[in-house]
Structure formats: structure tokens, C-alpha cells
Image (tube, rainbow, N blue to C red; front, side, top):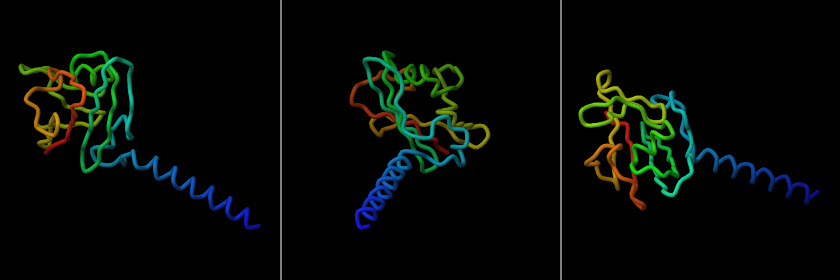
Length: 141
């Protein structure tokens, strides 16, 4: 009887731990996230370079780890259809990231791009991938 109780308790604890691990890497599909394509940390592609991009919106975030042969962060994101936008005189104006829309004309929101925690001096399509650097796209109002 005692072995059975210990076995059941161990099984329940294992399932609870697994549930916690799965839920830690996911975001809730509410607000801006309602249109998200990916809701948890995701690894994509094959290539010699690795670029890690964190997407943040409304106090939630997920991370994309992309393996690519692309030269720029923007090319790697476009390769996997993670960003979309309009071409302008300064390059690609990112309006959607992972299906999350930022529409400055409607609500004053836009996608801010950061490299190593600092506001980027170039757009995603002109920022060269550098091993060890961190990249963020932050939904900003």
C-alpha cells in the first residue's frame, strides 16, 4: 500500500513539474497576442549563424532562436515570415512581428528594435548578425 501511494505521488509530482515547465515558456493569447503565430519560445531554421530575438508586448515575451545563413537580423526574420511591413525611404518599416500588429496611425504603437539593450541605430534589415549580441523587438506605445 505504501509503495502505491509513493508511486502515485511521484507520478503526480512529475506531471505537475512538466506542466510548470511547459507553461513557463508560453504567453497568453490575449490583447495584442490574440493574433500571434507562435505562443512559446521557438527554434527555427538551419544555418551556420544563430540569432536570438526576444519579442515583447504587453508584459509578455517569447524568444526565437534562428539558425540561418542570412547576413542581417531582418533577413533571418523575413526568412521565417516572423516580420512584415512596408518598404519606405529608410528601408523596411516593421508593422507585424510574429503576427502581432503595431499600427502607429491607429493607436500610436510601433515596433522598437534593440541591440544589446540599447535602441538600435539601424533597422532590422540593415543590422548585421553578430554572435553574442542580443536583439529585441518591443511593441511600444
